[in-house]
Image: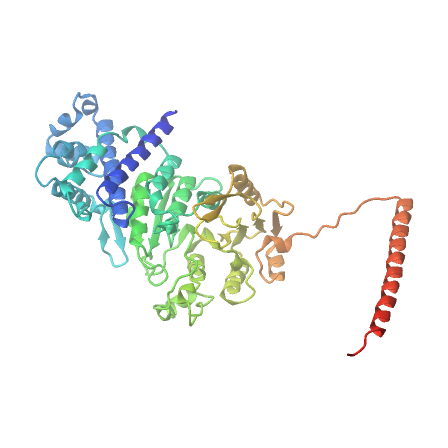
Length: 540
């Protein structure tokens, strides 16, 4: 087993141990367990990163037989100077707030209060860097009182948690990169994304989809880029895009109506060395009250936008509030109708698509997951949006994905790619026949191989026409097809020809003639029999 695999196994084992503790105290597989696991894991990660930074900066502490004793021996001024030399992604932690200190104090009375107060103090001391904000300006800090979720034996529960945290250190894995942390993040909340519990299913976009979106958007070197997701979830799309650009070459912005998803995105940013972007993570309603604006009060524009927005949602309570002068330009194609029944079936994704189109810089690019029905709708808001993508010459391409690429929905999806600088042709890809179907819980899921992912990405980036797979069309050709973005409607109908000799042709024609004569003869015989039988019928 290589070093990375070993660390991955150890990290997953720590997560399993924490979940086991929660199960032993009656918190197995519920929302409170989720809050505890993610916060304790984050505390462990930040603690070990702080220790790692201390040792990197101060060689004498790293060489000491008892590093913690050497660290405690520093004066307050020396510790403050040490903190100032640390990276901005490192939380400031007082010696008494270290996991090792809590481990030594676990037999003190009211240990649960000691742990809770430690977490709350760390959150307060690092609030400016690590807090997510709401659209109203309130801060959602790192940690809360975790022992409150346990009804009995709170001290014992907290002792069990601390005892699990001292058996393993992250110190040797901070050099790991995106793929490692993406795997760990997904494993961390995997139990809360099951088809049975299903509470957190919305937080995942399949990595194949995220990878295709990122690699088709980013071509060549990029620097100082702003990247945005108006319905971010846990940030899978943003993390893949930031990784493709370079975490130090971009700034992340997001908004999501769910506080849980905003907290998960913060965790993802911390794991992936994007702490500098946490102040831009907003909990709020993007459609009703978009948060990110410039100094003149206009919506901020972004270089790259990725999104897998909710397809359907009941927003009837505030749809009338969207009909305002400032929104007419943003929602140029109008509002979806409010059905009299099944309001939860209201199509909200067209509003996100329009919002994204409005939020791109003059050189901006975007990738958006939409229901495949969007790309061929013959009327309504969907067609108006497609028409504007073509008329404004901002459509770069479309990839129609295999069915069941999302295990949690049977809706077929396509990925829209926008590029404000694309004045040339458009690439349309039909990838619906790719992938292997596997069983995931009660549902079927389609898995793309690495080779198939690369086929989609390379075909898109090279704008290569491949028989029955992709086609390259002009904006005028799309107009002629009523703005349809389905690759299949542009594929050529091929007629195969076979060369034969004159003698072979005569023989085939003679065979056809003979067969037809036999059929005609049989037909006449049947006709006479039917007429004869009809004459024999009598009324009784």
